[in-house]
Image 1 (cartoon, rainbow, N blue to C red):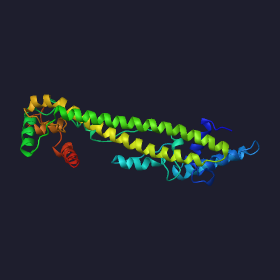
Image 2 (cartoon, rainbow, N blue to C red):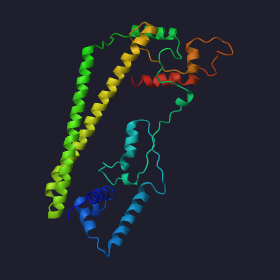
Image 3 (cartoon, rainbow, N blue to C red):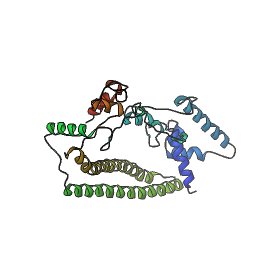
Image 4 (cartoon, rainbow, N blue to C red):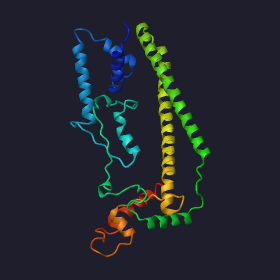
Length: 289
């Protein structure tokens, strides 16, 4: 009997969730396990699956319905989310139980009105921009020259990354079809030896696609930064008379200190310089430069 797409999906889900049970350690074991279901005992198999599910949830999330994971870096979050990834191979994955994912950045600095990038002419005075630009130039030995030829090379490299990604995705789809055909043929004949070669290639291609996607994304982000730099440069030059852009991190209270406030009721800052947290934020950003 030919396996349907729904049956293949069920086999994949059971292998992913219950791979620590011998009955679901691989596709063949899952198929044999389900093939044993007869009109008289399919209820017993259903009860076993329910019990396995309850045991898995009890030892992973307990009675919770919502799981919250936090991390300082993206790698921290990814590590904690691995048990919910459908590609996880080290143990059971809980991805079929996940119905909704919410993501947000919990940063108290944003509640204080802190801007991570000040557009030209906002908050910080023109005088301050000129002073910062001049100070930057005295400490800078090399100023990048972004020529048209460099932009053309970047665009050509971007096309190369995109073409490579498209090629890998097309090959992956082809291997995916071959893998399903080999599985169906193997189920009919009882010999699944021809199934594992395309499955291995499918796994390799998935990894290559992820790497190519990351590479293309990194280059795209780099190019976006170049575009923003080139767009801001003329405006910043009008304020600082310098080709070097000065993007400051500030808020309204910090700006009062920077501007050299007058000790009057309407100009005096409500917070001290350190209370604004801007100096700490700048030191933190400096560690990533």
